[in-house]
Length: 125
Image 1 (tube, rainbow, N blue to C red):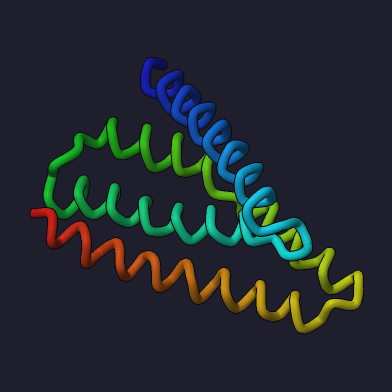
Image 2: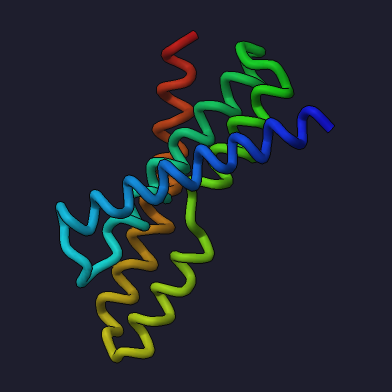
């Protein structure tokens, strides 16, 4: 039960961070393209890989810490459902090029961020 409550607390922290980062991104980059969600998903992919690698490969975090940070914080921070909605919205609005760019940038960016996360995590230990 304690682990569940800590995951929920981590999720609350992650959603708060997502809200603040997303609001900042709209002010910084505008709302015509979902740069905030893109950046959140790429950053979240990077951080999740670092957390998982340092926990599972290097044993620097306990299993509890990995679940709290990975499932809780990063689960609350990343925004796949928002990504899905925004991609469909771009397509429905006839912005096929922007929708495809967003789709490719998100998938490619998140994969690249994950690979970079492995490199950074390995370099840390």
